[in-house]
Image (cartoon, rainbow, N blue to C red; front, side, top):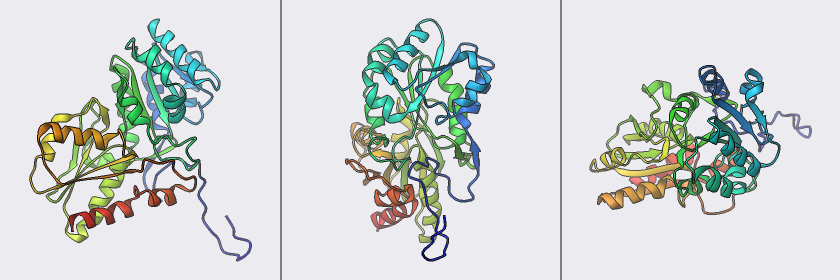
Length: 333
């Protein structure tokens, strides 16, 4: 956008942009929409449902391919969840999309009572997780993992990139029971292809090993963790990265095994508030297993977050690559 007072060009970032791809980073367009559409060709029981957000959750791709299996419920998330429960009782497998805040805050009781209590086969896939929009507290789902972890029968997933999402879709469709999955939409970075990665429900994966620091991360923070690990090589800080895409059920065995390796600082990095997410889940694992290690969290504060451009907010709240790198460098001394 042009700055008319100076004649110089100034780059501006919309608060609503949810893509976290860096400039020049490889991406894939709408991996969720394409993966679901491909799976639906083999699974006639799969239907798509949304609350007026098909275009903004990439479900419009499914709608175009299977209009007779697509249900637009309007801006009524409680109705969306109740109707999905009804479809599941009749043998369908609904993939339900909306924004994470609208599912976890507005329709929580409907998910709890109509879906989770009956252990129904409903897959709830939600965009704008954590701090991936600058629209302020009304749209920032900073506490969604804590809410959904607390719901009995609910599987909870926080994918890292396009590969995670593409492989997650058939995995959660095959899983019997309700699932809550965070969604990266639009042009989604491709990161995990360099690490021989395969998504497995309930499994954490060690992407790289290191002797000084173990970063345990989920979602977009795994991208950041890998960037930090590369950046800290110049400081001779050797960083391991353990990606935890399934928040519930947690891969306790792998987390405990990696944390037991002596001499490493354990850092949990998550795009979520410090309360009730991956950090506290991992801390509980370590405490119950009797594992005593130096421990730090990279997470959002227990606060209502500001509105603004994402790069600014990520720096402000400590989840950018640069701030995370500097903090880890300071922690290891």
